[in-house]
Length: 488
Image 1 (cartoon, rainbow, N blue to C red):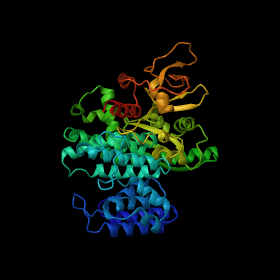
Image 2 (image 1 turned 135 degrees about the vertical axis):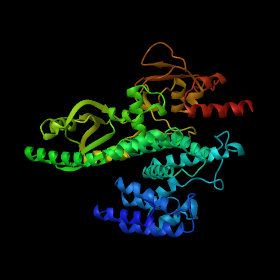
Image 3 (image 1 turned 45 degrees about the vertical axis):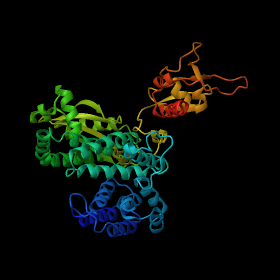
Image 4 (image 1 turned 180 degrees about the vertical axis):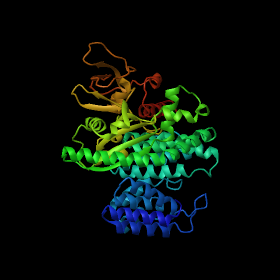
């Protein structure tokens, strides 16, 4: 869809159908952005306003609220149109202003070099330093207002979908940046929709010269399945409704959602199933041997209080669906969501899951609470850690640190003074001393022993070889800065 007015009208109509609040703010944001972006065009020649409208469209279809949709419409006005964050706050509200601020890139003009970044003052590495600083800002604000992350996800997804006009080196640079920063954050937020689709777009861009046949096979398969899936979806809706009525259950069906898996998911399944090593060796006949769609049976229940896998088995075994669908396996996605793998009478494979409406939204969008996003150190400059372990202090305080961390990394996590004076550690109450390069495991209890002077103050005993003993970038950064000053 390239007519931005039609897309925006669909957004407004959808919001009205959902009885959303503050629709007037969305309309005001659209008019504001359209005025600010007038006479601006994308590299493809389309009016620039099309991009923020498409970003807002993605977020509206994922049921984000009107503040987030308004922020999507406004997200480039500060960076590209000279609007200030104060103006956004005055015209709209503080929440929208904060979200827009989170995703506004730092420019060369307002970049302040970071004394802790060894390369930020050099022209050769200035672009990289600005990029790092922009993401550090997003992470810093995002810890308090995580909706900024979702604007960035939708923005990058749309940019990757429309990147075709750019030369190959720029496409690769955008893909590398996305893999370095955005995909790991989407994973931390457990956003299946953005994680799967952004990762998939990176796959399509980076393999575009060799994936033409594969994409044609995929498109043809999806097209051929279209009418069949409409009938299957209606049949599932009917049989589930009949079964719930027979049980006189206190839940009702919200909808049945049939979603094709991404090209990357299907590629991974095919190459794993057939042990194929090259994309060009995949054949159209391979598609029928792997699950190509996920089917979600979503209930109106607000909380995930039932055993939905058990309910799914009951539905498949006690309705007429048993004549067409047979369970053969259970699979799990990246976020450990479970799917019952079923085969129909003509050998098509599907992943089916039952869940409440609230849980489906959380599966698709992720959650802004209870994730490891709060653990991200925004001073890191080489991507986002996605796996953490929990280590205990002698007082049983729980400290989260990146996996593969060493005793030295843990010491610096506690405090730089402890890090610089770290001699060894006692792990899990063992009487044996563990050297500072010992790798820690989840659940370890660690007592760090430091070098102290006669007054009980920490003594710096850091050596150059310590750079080989640490695995965390934050530790490396602190040590490099120290040795740079020490040895000039």
